[in-house]
Amino acid sequence: MNTSVILYPRNGNLALHRQDLIDMADQNATLSIILFDRSSSMHRYGSIPQDAVNAHFISLLDPPDQRTQFCAVFSFASTPRVELPITIAQDIKPLTSYRAEGNTLQWKTVDECLKAFLHIYQTLPPEKQAKLAIAIAVFSDGQDNMSNYDKFNRPIYPAPYPAKLQETSRQALAQKWELFSYGIGIDAKQMAREMGFPDDFHAVTVEATIEGVKKATADFSHSTTIIGLKLANIEAIDADKKKASTMIIT
Image (tube, rainbow, N blue to C red; front, side, top):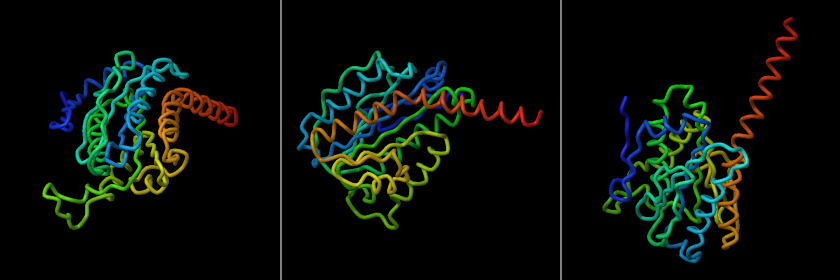
């Protein structure tokens, strides 16, 4: 099976191949996917969003759970853009071209990204899926203002978003992917509910400051690099339950 998806052909052209995910899942691996806002309202932070993402790359080099780390990065303004195709941590180069401008095409960008990865992931055999953990984070400081307009800036009726994204998110959660929302000066829980993401500890609101942007990315880095520890703990609990159940039956 030679399944592939071309994502954002005019803005980075990410060719996502089934074999990419199969190769990752030859070992216990984590793929962290970042989608961050580069609309004009983010201009006040200068290069800090880019610096914060670069700090995430560094955190992947020596993760506490010792899983092999991969990362992919997308940004959204008036158009989506591929900032980093799927890359193993040791080969990642720092981002250098961040510039905030334009509107906020958030819901459609996240929806298309989730759909592309789901399309490939769902073709993998179960034993490969079990080895590949996926964590996705959306960072934004404002409301989507483009997803329900056509290319001529005319409102689309009925408005497809955010309902369309919520359905895609439901499918991603069914695969046990972790979906994080980071609201920079906005309510992250509300942002999460709009996207269909969990509004529990996966939704983090930070101050609209440089330190807030750094805190948001640091939180995702921590969550991403301890996934293996959480999975090991779940496996140990399941094993204990199975053992207890066997003893009762005996």
